Length: 466
Image (cartoon, rainbow, N blue to C red; front, side, top):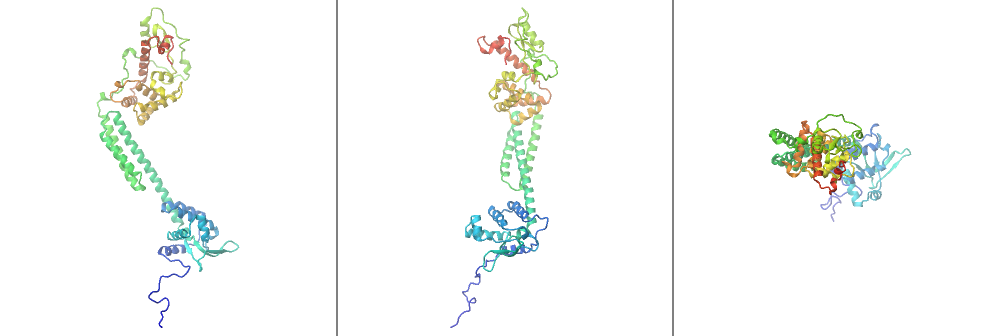
């Protein structure tokens, strides 16, 4: 009877593997070649810790998943420094059961992970004749015989990991800077739109460009490449430059009369204060006169003419009140000779935003920052006012705007305030006149109040309202 020799028959599987041997792949062969290039770490390399640190720094930029990084980190627990010296080989041999327990994997998952490490070119497998992992060291700790995971490819790729990590950090920083420029350009375009609306310009073209900039910014927020972001940033910044130039041209081309948004002398020449020069006194109490101790009645028969004379002459430290009685002015001399309490009394819309009944100037400035929302004054315009006037005087200007009735504005309160800031830059704004106008209006209101009204108590007693 003819028999076929085993291994030569037609039905014999020629790809059948011998027991304990793993199937080779092209990736495995490439990893083995990489491992053959290991000649030991140099003295200045820093040892296995430096190799692991370089690998972990490069892993995010190589697209390696966390489970791979964790597995390599776990393998480094079993290696020693002398394994990485020239003439040695960094092989570790943790058992399969230990690997499964430490990494929380099943048997199949552990095999798939090990194969993935080899295919990524990170470790090479050194198989024993019986397929088990084991090793022996001499008394000096050097490996005599070992079968398991060979970490040599990681050492060979050490410089590659460092270069990838450095390039990745540079790319990440470039992306961060470009994203910041995207935000700055988008917000700058939105500021131009707000300014155009506030000064009464036709906002159509500005709004369209702002919408396009917002859509482009949304797309760029999902971009990860610095090249893509750089193109988008260049487009946004060109758009901002064009809109800013157009805004400047439109504002410069407006008639001079249309830019006069602030009326600094609304009550006429009879209520203008006396113009005098003084040096700012750092001691506010020195210029303060008590209404109870210092005020004295006017001469008999003076009457109304004395009132008008007092307002026209504007003697420092006094005003003429009802019945010819001279009222002492309560000036701190801190900001335009007006105290925070008096400003709040003259501009009561500040009061709801104050945190305490007797505010200081920082409290008034903070309250004005909240009040600007009610007056439709944008944050950029408020910042420009603080730069042009100073924080306290900007708060005073905003408080003055809050006292104007709705019919007083040609456009909006924000446009009115914008005009005040423009006059301040040109050196044409005189807040002192407006403050005196508010005082005169408050005094007239007190005179018109019946004596039974509690708001006129201060006038009848000869004390100013505080």
